[in-house]
Amino acid sequence: MSYGFLDQKGGYEMRVFRSKNPNGPYTDGGNRSAVFTSYSLNYGPNAAARGEKLMGPYSDWGFMSKGERSQGHNSVIDAPDGRTYLIYHTRFCDANKTASEGHEVRVHQLFQNKNGWLVASPFEYNGETITNEDIKTKQPFTKDEITGTYQLLIHPFANDHNNLVQVTPVTIKLNADGSITGSKTGKWSIEEDTHYITITLGGTAYNGIIYEETMDYTNMHAVAITAVSNGGVSAWAYKYHPKYELVYQIKNQKLPVVTNQGIKKNID
Image (cartoon, rainbow, N blue to C red; front, side):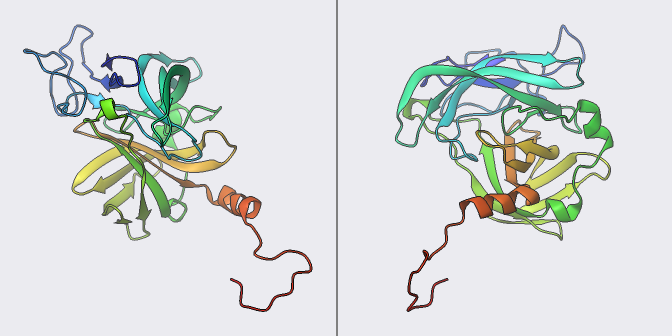
């Protein structure tokens, strides 16, 4: 469901509840009810933790030039191709808080983590072939391929939408010994023969999946992680896929010298 209002400062966002019965009761991972028994503002800078928040306003993610915000007006399609898709529309805002009410439609693939909660892909759907069945039966990377330096984005419940605040990523490292170091610390593990991964940060466990995905606005591939805590906070992470990281460096590396230049000093 969508909370808030659809404009730039409307606090639009998507929350998820679930039930074993179509008629309810619907609850979140913390067993909190989707039904409010008294008035409470359910979005914004003082929003209470209720439901699972699929994503919130964010920027500086991958190759994006403008941040996404006010994501909502959503639909979900459980498709015949064995995949599930989240369709929503979003507005944009750059680092200088230059914003407009123009919006675009986005499609992200949705997955279920090992606890059955929905998690959204960190980038737009771009023809990835991973299916819901693949998640449960195949392991996409070895532990050595998973280790490395990642950009991490955590989508908190509270957000100051009136001031167009957007979350930006921090750097963490998934180490071979299962530890996580960097801006946040903790541990990680993957469930053998599946896509299921758990990252624990500051004592909070985020259960999700890891897979290969194409990054927005480029043909670069990433090792991508999408996960959610029992408290309903979603976390995304990515690093360049090893094969594409080398290509990216070659394409973007600038030589420190030019043809026929005389070198009279040490140049790194």
